[in-house]
Length: 88
Image 1: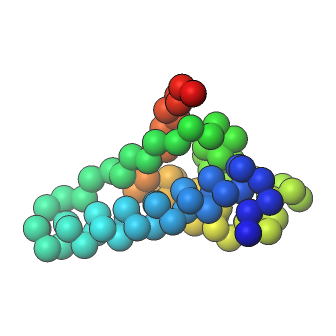
Image 2: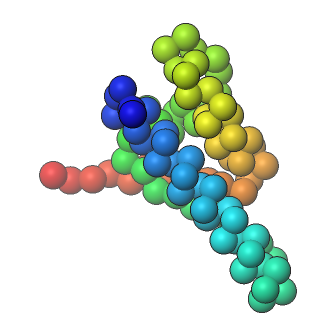
């Protein structure tokens, strides 16, 4: 269970990134095409900042492993996170 909106966004972002990377690799093998960069749009700037600037924080140590995977995917250019403004 998530304790904050940022944490729930991180959980969702990780799941979306894992699925997108897997699907990208699968389709590139089946269709014999080059892999493309996966772009994930988010409206939570805190989650995007935490993913791009990975550091150990005492407040986020319980989501450390999940966040490290996303950071590595961003560093290897498999995943790109972009901010999208949502209007209410």
